[in-house]
View 1 (cartoon, rainbow, N blue to C red):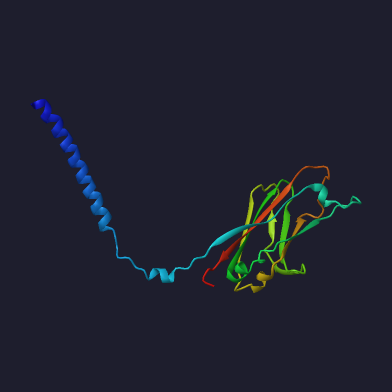
View 2 (cartoon, rainbow, N blue to C red):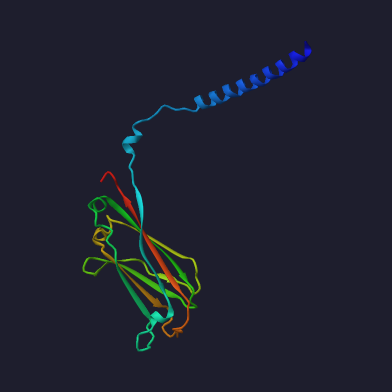
Length: 194
């Protein structure tokens, strides 16, 4: 008889511990609940964020040379970028965030100037200048602008990027394979209540 009572007592004691643990968890879960406040939904504002790739290119040393062999100190890249072709985005946008990443393998500093262009390729906004140090393989840049302070941003149809050598007396080797890579994207913040 003792052989049967001991396992029964052991199982009963284990179930008793589980029951106490279950009641403890239930008590903690119930005691932490506060009254629901549905008025918070009235103050909620959904602001979706979209990231859109803008411009990506690589600059090699030979691109700083004219066909005649003369070295130039700057290169200008112009691209179409029609972010606002959809009326939904045009009517709901509240903020733009311009982001850029640059990988500079050159032994020279570069100045990058980005301008947002309208449909006639005229500048409507200048992004802050970027000074990328020599051999900086992880340069990052971010600038945020609101449409309230810059309503002309809604007319953006293109981008102009100027790459200048910071040292005009620098002599480049056109046969070198050193790269300057530029990647950019724009984060668009929308107000769904607008």
